[in-house]
Length: 138
Image (cartoon, rainbow, N blue to C red):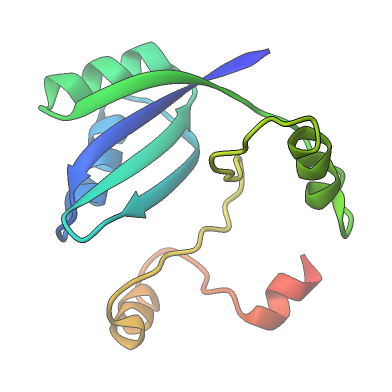
């Protein structure tokens, strides 16, 4: 029941995450979930994709450093405390949880340096901006 994850190491500069997703899209690889973490100089894009071998090859061919690893994927109960209960079950057994992210959702959070400018730009993009009130109703 292991799932393959791709970790892509990038410089922390404008356009690098876009380049990763563009390479995958052009290769016909569909992103099922992702996480981006950063430091001042570098970042890691973690991805679960429909075809990890094809994705890894496309990213490596484009010059990215890519590591493949195995992760666990679960389908949580959609209720308050669902995630907490599962994480508690694992951590109380002494298994360290290094990170967690979600998959297969079209709702995506983007943290940007200039939120007002990003909102203005996204109003003209083929996406729907989601409010805090809408999040509460999901």
